Length: 186
Image 1: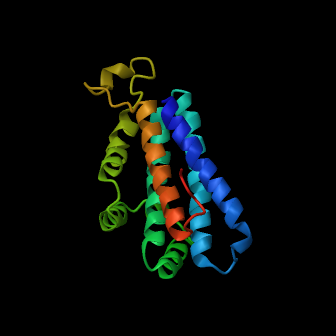
Image 2: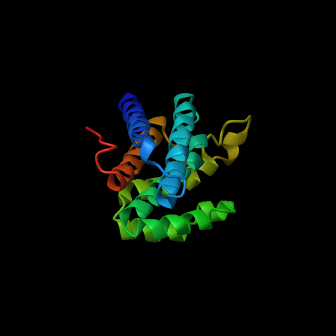
Image 3: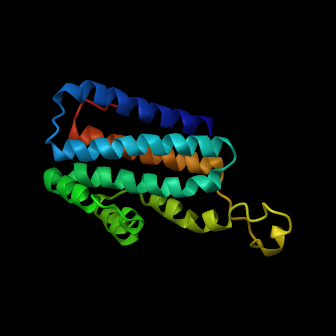
């Protein structure tokens, strides 16, 4: 768990330093910069919340945030991959009036992950935890154990943080692809 926390901290530091270096070059009319900045801000904030929840024995409550982080990282990779200007414009338009189902469109996520060659292990793990989120801590109230599933569905804090660290690494990779040399991980 400690290593995953360190990896998350390093990713957030790389993002912070990268945008500090890049800052004077950013232009308000640059839709690619706007989209990637928005997604980066959300990624850092979501990973902060994930860490707090996981460290305080609420890994199952962190799972929707982890799903959100997956979506953010995939959006970042998708925009940075090819045809960035058109993709950023589409992303910003698509999310101008967001609805929850628009933010977390499962089919779109699967299609983009496949097209990007996004790490399938992390994506599958995060998506499989939907059930764990529902059934997690199922015995948390008196007599709730009567209705709990036979096998525990709780996600561990370590697994949640490992997945979050992997997703933040993908976010950093997208930024480095867009602005080479500004978001180095070494």
